[in-house]
Amino acid sequence: MRLHTHTWGTGTRTAVLVHGIMSDHRTWHRVAPELVDRGYRVVGVDLRGHGASGRGGYGAESWADDLVETLPGGADLVIGHSLGALALVLAVERLAPRRAVYCDPAWDIGDRATAAASGYPQFKDAPRAMIRHFNPRWDDADVDVELATLELWDPATAAALPGVYAVPRTPKSAAVPSLVVLADPSDLIRPAGAEELVRRGFEVRTVTGAGHTLYRDDFAGFMGALEGWI
Image (cartoon, rainbow, N blue to C red):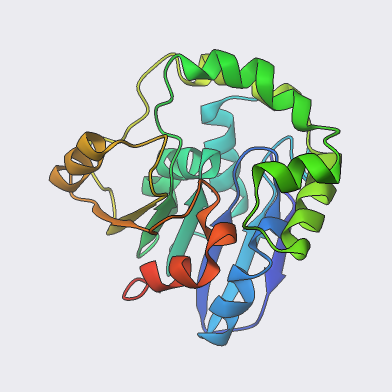
């Protein structure tokens, strides 16, 4: 499936941004301009079932295949968050970027996939107060974006999660130079898992005190964690 994309800037280098579940390209509204200032043309994608992209046929492989069909190969930088990091790692060999950054990646959530499948849809019509309660460090613009993206999100994507995680998804090695940036603490990758990723060829950094959407909880800390990679 060809996905909807949004482009910021006209730089000589190319960066690709892939959002997580329940979101779309607008989640990167602070990250993208920062990359533009650093000389990138930035392409943000809406995953299948999100934003202005098509619906149906949800699964790890389809999300990854869509990225390959839609995005430019050989980008200088690709960044994926959560479910977007899963889609990206499954597509990265075919996309062949120079560098990859995975933000608190949802590579293996195990039995929690069933709980997510039933729990995530409650956020579809979440009131502003609920979003603010779960994300006290976000600024008003991020809350606005979250409400707008939830309005377009298809909650049927959540129903696919138990199938997505029925098989191991953590990569066995880094296919390209790769950085993993983790929340503190990360509910998705524990310290032992982070150590294993280092053994598999990933660099691992942490944004101290940040939650799962670390680039919204601590934008400055997140951008600082990317130094040397962007």
